[in-house]
Length: 340
Image (cartoon, rainbow, N blue to C red; front, side, top):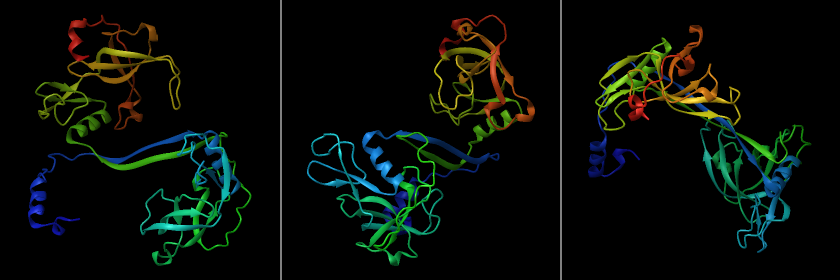
């Protein structure tokens, strides 16, 4: 709803609530930002039956103690809490109970052309399943429409093994699965991702442009120098007033020894992750400590950045490979205790 669609008084309140944001005094950096990971789920004995059905080109529901059939099957009876052990094949034809037209599909959605999201109740089931119906236009959709699944040839045991639903009561049987199935039996992997256009703040731009040139740029506020710089002090809200170039030397304030391996790990444990307080700054930041045995790292240890080759530099703190000890005497605890 736009302001013009609201009452005059309410529109005035909305307009007054919008603060004027001045254009930045200097250009800011903007770049796509993508976060992705593979969500791996253990299916257990109940959902494995549903996944096995999809692999075979069938839909399996679970019957509860009151005789209702749920699709997908719940792991436990919602009425009595007992594990579900009675499985039944449903469909393949079903009925649309409600739907919503998607005129402009977004990246990552099931179809690249306009389609309908729909709740579909398979014959023999008592609950509806959310999926998509392929149709030429919204005019072909209606509540009560009879639909059937259109199966992919390569199936993995996920709900998108059904490519989409189509109108009609005469489905084509699923082809024999030409895919490899689940990578690990009883497990499914679902890629998760989000991409946005990220615009840096002016202070973040100082930092990113500095790191690209091999410089460490912090920002001064009324209560100290922050690295990376903030728009304002997190402690008192005062704005950052100037950029400060910092040396690539500092001390370790706190640290941990990483002993547990995990997916995507690039360094073999054990190794040290530590908060490094750069000389002249007032807050530490997290980085790696290498070129020293993990059990020799200590609070107050003097360290210096080890930069990657300049040809590898970009707008990222990965330009610094790690920090290593300088061999200088440790800092006195009193000199950094307020920065812990």
